[in-house]
Image 1 (cartoon, rainbow, N blue to C red):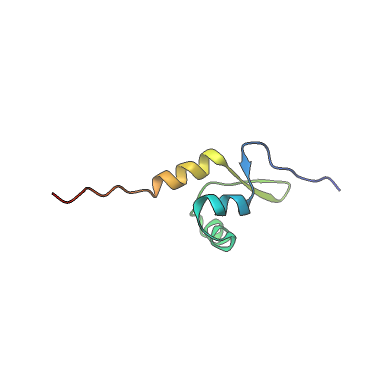
Image 2 (tube, rainbow, N blue to C red):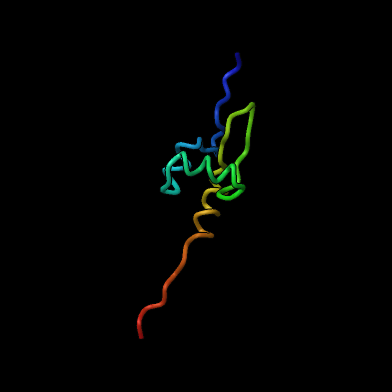
Length: 68
């Protein structure tokens, strides 16, 4: 049986969850709902590209102006 290893720029669901600050269950739910960061499947295994995780985090980042 051939093992599937992530490419250097890919994150496993566990690593992606840590980067985002959610659980792997949340990532799985987001995949089912079609939300969350983009992901790829290779030989039935799920991986996240670092750039996609970074873009997802950036899209959810807000800046609040200071009080004047």
